[in-house]
Image (cartoon, rainbow, N blue to C red; front, side, top):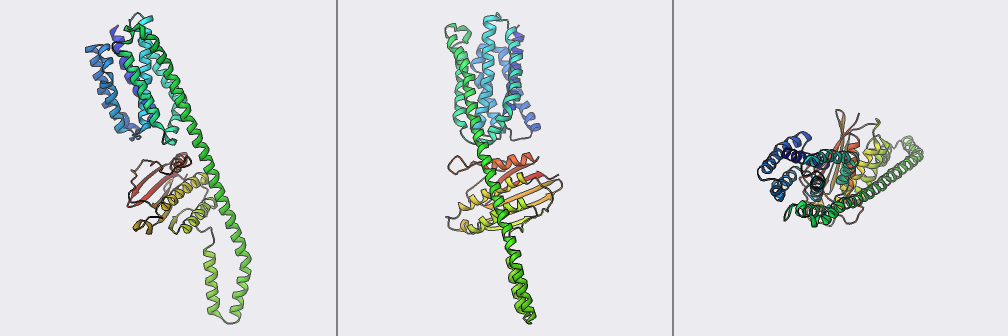
Length: 430
């Protein structure tokens, strides 16, 4: 029957990896992540199984943190995309859930299975797949959204889960295994009951933050739509005024030509041409996307910042809602960055520029927004930087861009380069 116990340990370690990998975000591709995990964690599992065979469950239970928890923590921290509270919360939560199942099945086997390890093996055989099914069915998608959308506030939750893990590990095995301390069993059972209740409270709190993010995101989209409509309305009004004034311009030019004043007529015509060049609507044929450019071109002009655009798109049908979200948030971030340079002296203040490029590459539309930023700002490629602006209504722009890009089967990356903040977005165009 010892074989059943050893098999249940191997089963536990294997499914602990599955639970964790369902919920965390690796910095590498899935293929590389699986390869690295198989090599590193395979060695850890073999080490712990060998220790279990040599020293028994009582001894290995006391050193489990040193032989399994810490090595796996270090490995996954190295390959994780998130090296902050989000990672530690996910890691501690997966380990605590596994330790909870170990404790429950161990107690059940001791009191109801006669320590034959049959009930322990069956319990672990069923509970781990059940937890994984619940994670995939109910938790994984909203939890991934939470990790993407909620940048802060994870530290306190990570600390709580770490303390729960240490509490379970200590009370289960020190000074001896809990089944040998029947007088402390009621307190231990209360801890086992309180743990899922605590996790439920944490997830409710995090989910409310996600709902708040979605609400603020919706308000931001409405504001972007309002700006686009206002820009279009202003554009139409200027077109009407231009049409109305064109009759007068035509009469004036005709009068100058009739009087033989050719030079004056040409000078007047150049003035009319310059006035028409100021007409909004010169960036691209798509009226919605053009309205975004119009709005932010005017905003940058008011700030005294340089603005360049290279828009190589026509009037073809485009997913303008998502593209307007991407452009609006990207240009808003650029404006915010330039505002931070307004009060600076020296070279930073004199080179406040924004450039936008849009062009096709096979089946993808490529967007690049490049803006001057602080010289001391460093953003690693592939990492979404946290906002340093106060208040709860900031820090959603880049996350919104990434979500919009993913809806269009694309992706977003941002980084700093040569004193500029670069935002690259690639979305499918067909």
